[in-house]
Length: 189
Image (cartoon, rainbow, N blue to C red):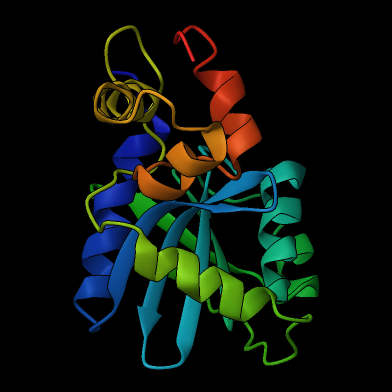
């Protein structure tokens, strides 16, 4: 059976919820999404999921310095070249047998950039806690399809709504109204 990225999510969620964290998935941030976010009190943990440890996932995780206290990459394989992670203070979580195991702890970060942390916290609080991180957009399923249904319902009740209004009032996983409009361009709007 082929392992997909979304299968990494449940073990990660279980690990952090067992420690008292509220776990969120697919939170928009600067033209991308943070796969998993765990929040407890004033602590934010950002986790990027990939099947293996790559330069790309390390770069994604590094940008979370802007708002997160701790940063992790979660992978399904044995990590190679872990020195890149340790160099940047990024922790490694490995998923084995449906369990999340912290192989390397993240270094704590308290030097946030500008107002990114407050903006990110507001986005987390606005999102429902029922997403699944890493879901592929397959025909007929996935976050895009679910969002499209909510947008269609909203447009039925608000036919003159602008994309800015739709983005603001319809629960979605997009970074901004332009990316939402582009992804849902097939709608008669």
